Length: 151
Image (cartoon, rainbow, N blue to C red; front, side):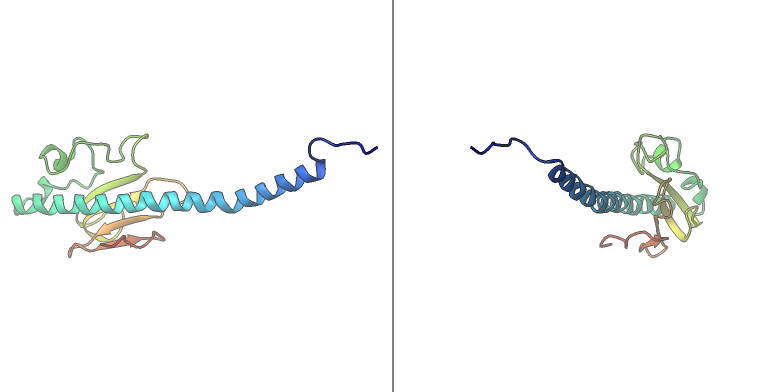
């Protein structure tokens, strides 16, 4: 009479754990980069809006660009927010908000480059990523950022 076995052998379980481990080492870094790229795309879209708001403010206040840009990160006391050109939302000034800083520029940008606005990753593996909007309204990448998304 043959004895019937239930369950899996130790070797079978070890092979399954090994395969899952290999898949995880390949999949997790790719997932993190894809997630970061989507946040960078969102930041690039927002910086275009900030640049357009900064240009409108400069057109409304000729000769007084200091009324529109103060070189600091966008926040509730920033001139573009207090004058109603952009909404008072979390522009990356809190620790729980956006992983990107947003700045308005009057020529030279805090993030690098020159133009009307820029954004830069706060910290982490991708802290060299960022974008700036130049004087012609074109999006430019900073560092090893992904290309500007269809702008």
